[in-house]
Image (cartoon, rainbow, N blue to C red; front, side, top):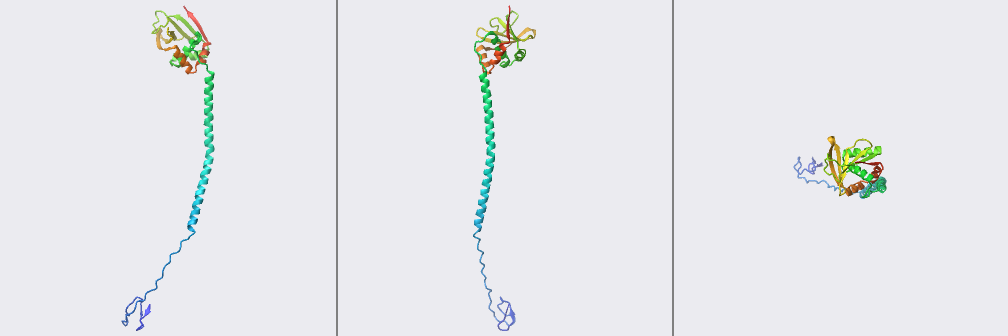
Length: 232
């Protein structure tokens, strides 16, 4: 607010003409005040950098501790697996070393035992399985040797002789014949004296299969129980 220089009437600062006397007035400009922006804090980047370094360092220490704690567990698990594998391998090696393979040529007792074992394990015939189990329980296997008669209709008569495997004293359906070319023919006798042919195997293949199954010791053990009887 100011006064008119002519009449002294109060007028506004931005008024160009006195409303009282009409005097032309000059406009008074307000002084311009310059605003200076505040200077940034030079220490702020250093503080941020130090905080980041501390955070990264703390995270690295924590990860290192977790790694050290987990490492013994992994090592222990690896040692346990290796120990178990070693025991399994040792057990297999011991079993293989204690089993004695069969020779291709066996005596009569071991021959009957090998045929019984093969029929139970390889042919997977239930009658031969039962015969093997009974033989091992009662520790007795009787082998009856007799000539094939005309009423015995066999697919493979072999050398004209049929062998009956009888575990203990019970009646048994287990039969076999031998061909000239060392082939074994397996039979089981069912109702009405019917001879059911199960299959044939070359003697060499029979022995090889038993050795692959590591059954040599079992066959020899059964062979100790065999008694051969000839029926003429």
